Length: 189
Image: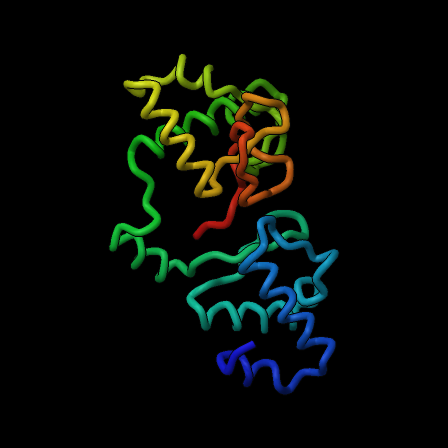
């Protein structure tokens, strides 16, 4: 791996070291939150603590992403510094587009009693056409461009039904292609 983690990994046996490295790679490079079921380092509290120490050394932290699911994100101090420099900040039109997706695919279905829980995932998609019709964003191209950027950034993703937008049933980060969008319960980076 690198000298950065040697002092944490050297005292461990091969099995524990491999479990930590696998979990670190899954958290940092995976498209989906990592599951405790497939990564022993996430199940074991002492290994999970060591994993968080590894992440801390690179400005990251372990983030609980649901029942038995974990991901990683920037520590608050790092996120604040990046935001101060203008990195990772959504433009007003991108924020408006993301808000529209969340309202129509999460908030409204939840208010109607079709969606339970407190996460941002939903099987209730909305269409880009509906969003353009209901939005007060001037210019369909601006909204389309914002939705495209959100898809490329992994904040929204394609729903399985063509031309629909919704949060994913699995907490995916990236699933981009020719399909329409669905909001993504992605890593906070």
